[in-house]
Image (cartoon, rainbow, N blue to C red; front, side):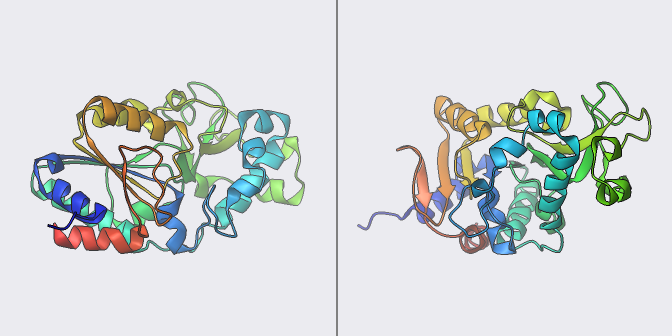
Length: 269
């Protein structure tokens, strides 16, 4: 008898009783096929090679808010025009299938792009924020923490682009405090904004019987937290990653691109 491949193991688990409660965590690798560079990957545009740990921080924003904004706006510009790939679409289909069967499914993405929602995913968690939102720096402002944001499309960057300085940083339309990107910076905590839905992620990690990581390097806090909760509660854990490397002996790796593996998986359920 042949030994099942990791893909076959994943399919069997997803079709079985463990598939009643599924948690999927996506990282930058899921959007690579859409032309969006990863952070820590080996692709030529990987952001990790370009000072992200210095500039992607609250400390940098406080030091130079205008330069922080310009750095992020350049990053956000690179996301424009990107379209969902087959992995995004397959995840939306998996969610719809689970819901139709009365099964649980939560998608958690570390990505700030909008490709999951464009593909049709609903009621999911953007645990690191979103490129299409800004927020006020003033606590309890309508547009500030713990729950407030405003659409990036409503923010006027004309003055900032014309004369970058602390004085031209865009301001909140309600309280006139400085605005900031709605992203989780490297020196911040998941609990700092309600829209990160950190508590919801932990609750789902504790009750999910199947956890699937997709296109993630396992280098940020949320992946370690979810992995530990899954381990404690006896969930089946898989990673879909073309590099084929496993961060732990108890995580099975499907060594394929997500845009290849996920459509095949969902079509076989």
